[in-house]
Image (tube, rainbow, N blue to C red; front, side, top):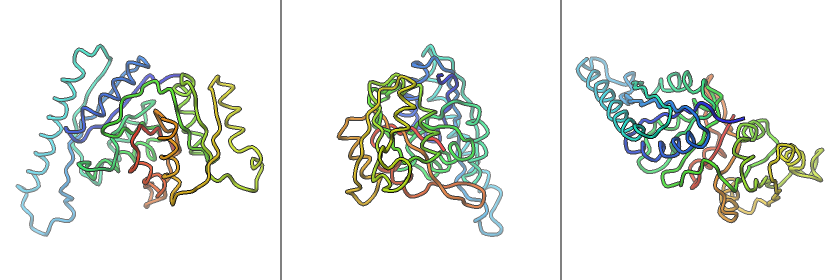
Amino acid sequence: MTYNSLFSVITDENLAEGVLNHAMEMAKAHDAHLDVLCLGVDRSQTGYYYAGASAVVLQETITRAHEESEAIEKRVTKMLDGSGLRWASETGVAQLADLGRHVASRARFSDLVVLAQPYGDGHGAELEPVTESALFEAHTPALIVPDNAKPAPAPQRIMIGWNESPEALIAVRAALPMLIQADVAHVVVIDPPTHGPNRSDPGGMLSQYLARHDVKVEIDVLSKTLPRVSDVMMRHAADMDADMVVMGAYGHSRFREAVFGGATRYMLEQAKLPVFMAH
């Protein structure tokens, strides 16, 4: 089991280098093909223009988005040329409200999507729907990389956020190629339930499952001593000097599209290291 097909979406030339460094290192480590969508975003929100807005104004926003897309691809090509990787790039333009369709239609045919952290200074509003569409519409696992995080294509210390949910188990299964190679995987359980079949052995079944895949596992049972679960997880990740966090992505319905729930959003806002998510 490995990642043979990687996909990345870049919507900002200033974020291209950081995201691509992670994607390229992953492609090298797994001998994978890397596809990059260089997406120019029309942020004009045409539906909100006052009646009578000229076609010239609308055309200018589209032209600007095309120029951004071409500038991103130029940067991507410069980095990937001569890398020795198998890769392809594609330009495109989409309105902010229509990003999901473009991302999901491509992401669903990959094994893993590598994306920039959707929140932070200088991170555009388009990054959140890009991440949501990859996870919730394409149903493809994603590696979310903060700006200053060091690429870790073969992380040695991995923290797993475990709450027995289907999303968390799906994330663990999707991360198996990296978990198997790691020195240790810490299954982190925060305030395990006092009732239920696993109350006396929190994380035990998952630990057994991983051990049968030759993953070296430790179980860490923690108390929620901070206001949010994500706070506890981030503190523990720092304490154990984790290279990566694996967790389920949770959301709720907005019409027929999912949006990040509070716990997932907080985690993505705070993360200082790569976060591997699946839904």
